Length: 127
Image (cartoon, rainbow, N blue to C red; front, side, top):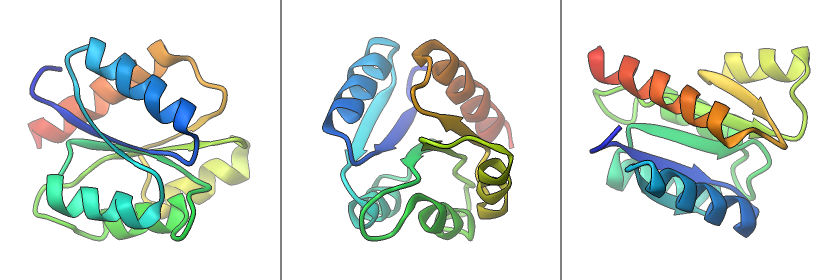
């Protein structure tokens, strides 16, 4: 996954730092954001290959931010993986309606998350 950039937007500094270190160890460039506004700025400025967004971001929540990203920030679609403390059927439907590629519950398995990121980045780059 070299030469890929992933945005990690989460309220938790621990989750942000963990994912940043984990993805960097896999050769992925990581951009982090602490809230919905800074995440949107990162998307428009950096145009990452994929965004991992906490559904409970401050300001603009993850669902709203996902809808905004998916509505066309650039000619290249940016897949979004939402992270949430709830990952029931209703939450997954809400995530899909917002345009998310996946909704992953917290706590998550980092290796499984990496597999999803690789899958969606690859698909995104092929289209």
